[in-house]
Image 1 (cartoon, one colour):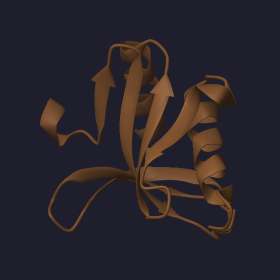
Image 2 (tube, one colour):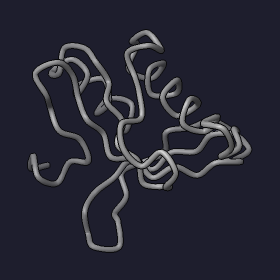
Image 3 (cartoon, one colour):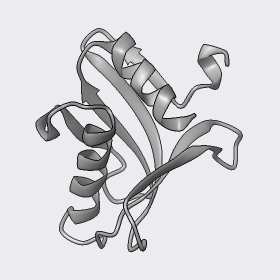
Length: 106
């Protein structure tokens, strides 16, 4: 998979991940790589939390932190706080985070 086809970007201090979040789901789950309507890739994910008072944003950050084996405080929503398409920043060693994310999605 070419770098431009991935829904994440490596940063010096971690990784940025584009996510499409579905709140009020029956379970918390990182599903698969999907596409936006314009063809850009994203990671599809679901959480049980409702989209009120930041609950779904906290849940998606915690879900990715757990999946990537980092502390909850190392993951945060940095864009799209009121939208379904969000950008998450996960702090850590970028190459290791990418490997864990790829392993989780395979």
